[in-house]
Length: 451
Ligand code: LLP
Image (tube, rainbow, N blue to C red):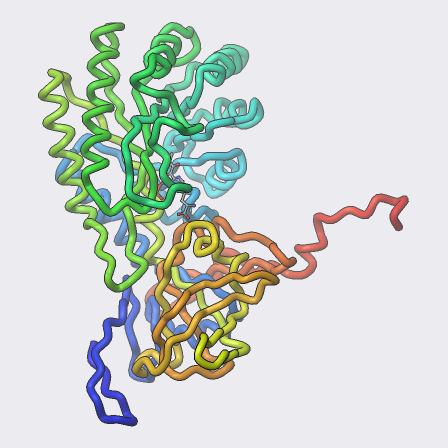
């Protein structure tokens, strides 16, 4: 995009990242799903999570289409932890995806939203007895077991309930991934899964095959999140398929389900270019074909559990700009009316975001500023971003907030969590209502002796 700087007449070139249905309308404002975001801010208040329904549906369709093309026997399961609420469940269900849940609360949400249990995958490294019972009673499609003690417990519970669930055993393939340490999950030193090489993975498989109330269908792994390279996925496939071959050799069992988790990265900044789903699916299929041939194994069904890559780019958070504080020759702090509580990712993972001033979307950049939240600590949302001249009341649209923002939001400093609005074809609908002060005190209890 080319901008002409009004004052100097100089030509400035800058790239404005527009994702999904985002566009700059005739009024020079950011529009998403045919809705003017400045109007959305007025109508629903800020901070506001805006979800581009078309963008999310397109991502679901792109995944299904790419995998159907490259590996027809594949199932795409949305990893709910990225963005779970009842409307999101309905969208992914309508798009023909399965859904993976990792807590009793996520399971309850999915079931309440009428997702068929036959399409649910249940995760967790420390599932409670109650969570396992709920999953068994509901008749979930797959339970992914994470440890030897869990296998025994699940077998007992299944026996008591007269069930025999299909299960996967989770492995930790020990592949090095170039992403933030907190979201790097496949390495050897991890609380997740069992090591395929130190005997524990094989012990779990043999145990699972021997236990009368469990039906072992395959193996699972998840190597990390926000991954831009295809190499670690290829390496993982080789390790997992080699393990399947060992299982066959040592037990005779031919497990035919391979769940590779999620992890494909999303675009947060204009200069970032994650692999397309098409490239990703092609790489996975090639590696799978090669490894299955190498170990002389038959057909397998492939499971994918994308979270971020289905929802991140469909989300935008709108904030109202408040105090602007310039420290001469140091920095200009621009504070917005949210922060750490609606987006903990910059603080937790040093995550970087891009933003557009929604009401000045076609204005050229005029200054470098740092965007801060309004929490009682240094909650920088975006450090050093070039934006047009700003004034209190401007609406800031932070992009790519559709994954792990709403789902990781908190009430820190007793902030009320923002509403989530779904936009599509010029319509905007609330899918999660804004919390109120009443919501905050509703769950508090004052014991009589403190009254
Ligand atoms: N499957 C399993 C078993 C997982 O644990 C995860 C994510 C996924 C699938 C989906 O991964 P994705 O496609 O979204 O990368 N809160 C962190 C991300 C934590 C991811 C945890 N597991 C963040 O904000 O970056």
